[in-house]
Amino acid sequence: MIPALLAIHIAAVVIWIGGVVFVTTVVFPMIMRMEDSMEKVIFFQGTERRFARIAKVCVVIVGITGALALQLEHRWDVLFTWAGIGPTFMLFVWTLFVFMLLFEAKIFNFLFGGAAQHDTKKIFRKLTTAHWVVMSVSLMVVAVGVFTSHARLMK
Ligand code: HEM
Image 1 (cartoon, rainbow, N blue to C red):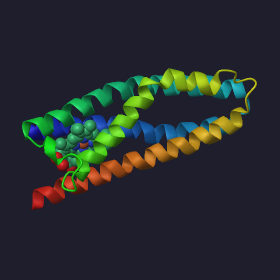
Image 2: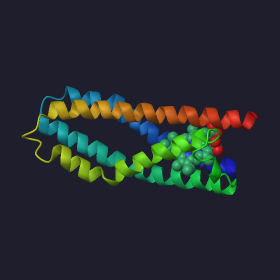
Image 3: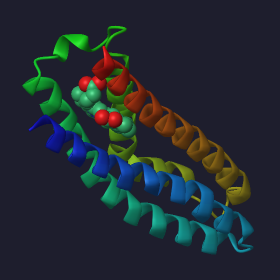
């Protein structure tokens, strides 16, 4: 049961974090090359909103399968301990994503509420940096997750 759960866990992680990598390394550079501000905003909102829907489904699957894996192994007590650094880090980043996806509409409205009056180039530069930070942290969780999971198995 646990290996099957973790297989689903990782499949959802791949789709979700892979999407974050795609948006950060492909979509953002394309947006930055666009001349027209309105075109930038429309393209960004179109791709990001579509991806947010896919990410939401993956976040739910990752959360359920991760929690079930801990429950079935009766390992909730490893959270917030050194031995459970992997799942603890996962839970932390997962919670961060849940908040970002829950308040996605509010964040968009705040950023682009009056896009015409704002400096869109500056906004997209900030968004690019934010995406690079989120992507790096996500990839770090994947690396820490695999490392600690297998280090634990080897003990
Ligand atoms: C950002 C979200 C997450 C990512 C990127 C992530 C990634 C990973 C990775 C890469 C593994 C290693 C699989 C392997 O090599 O065998 C793993 C395992 C695991 N994950 Fe996650 N995960 C996330 C969220 C969660 C959450 C929210 C929980 C539960 C609270 C969780 C619980 C677990 C458990 C219990 C394992 C088995 C390994 C172990 O017990 O150390 N994960 N995850």
